[in-house]
Length: 178
Image (cartoon, rainbow, N blue to C red):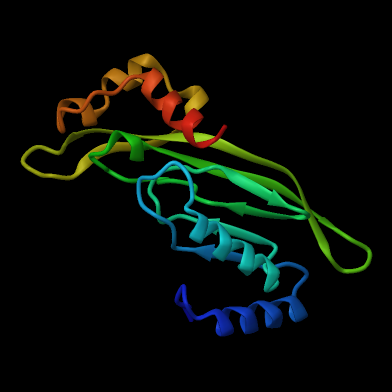
């Protein structure tokens, strides 16, 4: 079942149960403040507590913007991967990311997470269908593959009248993932 943010006893019990049956535990957390580039001290403390309770990795996704990740010993916290796919009207929310990592199994049964990376993505969408409000040609690109030509054709510019360029997209990533 889905556990609430403040159900610490149940989260700890579930984490320990998982660790008894599995080599590692990843918590997917719908938490954190929306549209902020950095996690609050409260959020960071809570995620560190989740690691203490047995989780090996935390992956959060509520803030709608990418945030940095942190390694804590052999464990990792992804504070936010941002939006992967969304027809948002906020330019900052067009940027998301993919988390990649290697899980190294210890002979003793524990794990170590190595080669942690965040690869930025961009959500691209085009003008709505005729007479409708659904966009078409929705596609997720790696930021490194997104071009000026694609950027100027993004519907966030034509439909929502927002400003967008490649420098802005790179700035959002640099501000969050430095």
